[in-house]
Amino acid sequence: MAMATKMLLLLAAVALLVASSGAWEINIHMPTSVATVTAMEEAMAPIIHALRPMLGSGGQLGSRAGVACDSWRLGVEAHNVRDWKTVPASCEGYVGHYMLGGHYRRDSKLVIDQAISYVDSLKLAGNGKEVWVFDVDETTLSNLPYYATHGFGATPYNWTSFQEYARQASAPALPETKRLYNKLLSVGIKPVILTGRREAQRTATITNLRRQGFSGSMAVLLKPAEFKGSSVTFKSGERQKLLDAGYVIVGNIGDQWSDILGTPEGARTFKLPDPMYYIG
Image 1 (tube, rainbow, N blue to C red):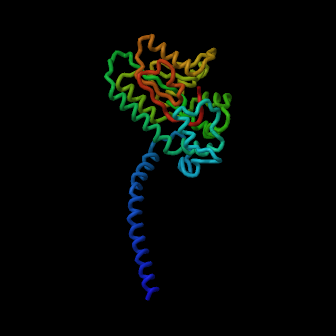
Image 2 (image 1 turned 30 degrees about the vertical axis):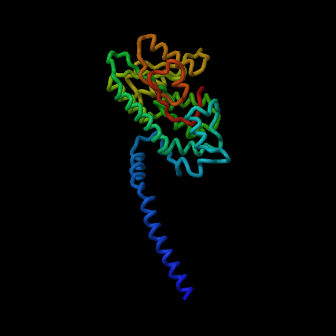
Image 3 (image 1 turned 135 degrees about the vertical axis):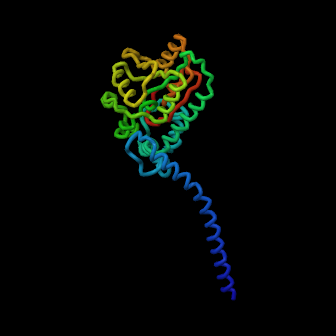
């Protein structure tokens, strides 16, 4: 009798567990439709680079060989990790999956959504003096086709090979930034392209920008060949020249902190994600 009673209690416990797990499965499966919609949206979004990852940007790739790659990336974006030369070798796969997957696009979209919301809040003078400063690399143009074959920043920067790539003027547009660019043109804010690329790259840079639909800018400012200072010094100096000429910098966007640091920064700055390289 005691054995029968124990068996009945065990069966009852199993039945309760099955019933409760069914309810739990409903709860944990609820976001599936949202995830499916997100995946569909990403599949239909303009492609930055044709490669696609096999895994997400987290999971087992989030920590490799003792390096917490997701924490390292956060440190980079928050400007707590500085003056680094290459992505940690153990994080190459993590950064590659982040850049090629939906995570990078979602992060970029959030930045641009905030920028457009800010634009909508502006009370513009409409006098043709309001400008918005844009960086080039990883801001208007994406160099993922190059970095996908150069370790996603895990291998040392090769100036010669990158110049050869840049001369092809084939870099695709960052679709989210293009959305902001077109928004500014529609409301009368003049885009100004300010890049750390050298004057020798002017023709290829302008050609690439125009091929990708970035036309109508007020100016394209490149670094003179003889300039020896930091990127912060160069870009803040060029922004000061804009103010001295009577322009108002209502916004400033770039992928590097050196794009948006240094006085004058602009009325509002926006930082796009880029864990592939650091420019001081």
